[in-house]
Amino acid sequence: MTAAAPAAKRSLGLRIAMAGTALLLCGGVIAFFYAAQRGARPTAAKGAGPDIAIAITERSCEPAQLTVPAGKHSFLVTNRSQRVLEWEILDGVIVVEERENIVPGQSRRLTAQLHPGEYAITCGLLSAPRGRLIVTASPQAAAPRLALMDFVGPVAEYRVYLLQQADTLAAALAQIKDETEAGKLDAVAQAAADADATFRNLRPALTEAELKAGPLADLQQALALAHGARAGADIAALTGSIEALQGNAKMLADTLATRTVLPEAMLGGALEAANALPQPVDGAKAGTAGIRKIVDLLHPLMARLDTALAAKTLADLGAIERGQADASGATALAGDLTAMRARLTLDTTGKTP
Image (cartoon, rainbow, N blue to C red; front, side, top):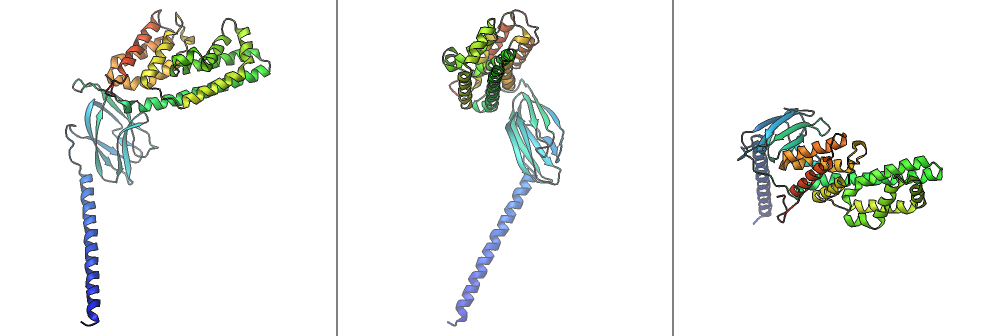
């Protein structure tokens, strides 16, 4: 065999390897093209009815508002811009469904099981104004059951609210200390009233044991007495122990930072606050801000399960806040909160009844 033979064999092997690589590259290109074509011409979704066409640009959706009955729906989203975009259905801060990386000129299908309520839809860039997706109750839709994941958004927002209120309470106690040192007792009384109102917003997140005895119970009692009938003596007692109370407030903030309060516990606390409302209820002094926050956070979930109860709760709470409730107003609200609690409590299967 001549010296040229091995070289020829190596050359042949190299050509075969190059040809194989080319075939792999071609196969990859064909596969990509096929996938792109399938993405551009999505197949019909089963059980979702006819497609609902959505056109998106960098700054808008067409249409920007949709109303559909509850149930399974298929949206065909077409990108009419010159850049890659995405389309999302949002329930508060929670992404219900989304399609990402929709290239210019391409259509992508999104199928979602939607419950009654109002959702936001992204329209092009995340900085663009959002559209609205209104889902109405449908008699044909199966009765919804919520799971733990449905609670993630409200629970997270409630924790943020609690931490904000804890910061407000700490600021009010610091003001009490400053005004005391300046000898401004009228300002001390006002700051004590503000601190007490803030603490009442936090009560629904605290346990019965915490409110009965211990540092948090001491803090609650001192603030409540500071602007009560014996304001003068109680303010003196408050100012004499302000540093200890500030320590209690710091403990409260640390506790809330790690506490997860599920809807059942939220509503249990709101119910206790409603039962503690003075009779007759004075709308301006009712101190319902903590109850209002919980009702607002849980209203979208409640509307999925029972629109009538969700509406009645808002109406009864609103009547109290406006000072329009009669003697039975607090009792009616307590009944609403009790019913909401029953509907939003997870059973042994991890779902609502």
